[in-house]
Image 1 (cartoon, rainbow, N blue to C red):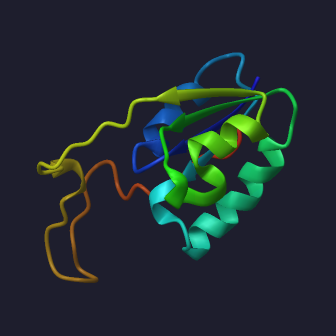
Image 2: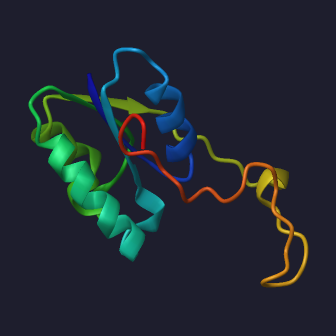
Length: 123
């Protein structure tokens, strides 16, 4: 199975969890909250290539018109299998991503930064 995930900062754990499934051969995550950044543009190319496949399943948060081509209503028209999932909002402290120390000399949490998103099994 091929899977694409459109989500906010939760895209990394969702992709990691799904990539552990035996029947997932390819997976791409698109961190929608980073839209417009060079990192997003790089991932967007991989996402589009995989999303153009007729046998892909797309998981997405409910996204409005301001998200352009990733708005839920547009994705429904563009991909054969789209499933929406609930966006989890948490406004509290994230101790796993809280930095301690000054710039360039800070201590990192055991989880590190959340910028690495696997795009394919084994990568």
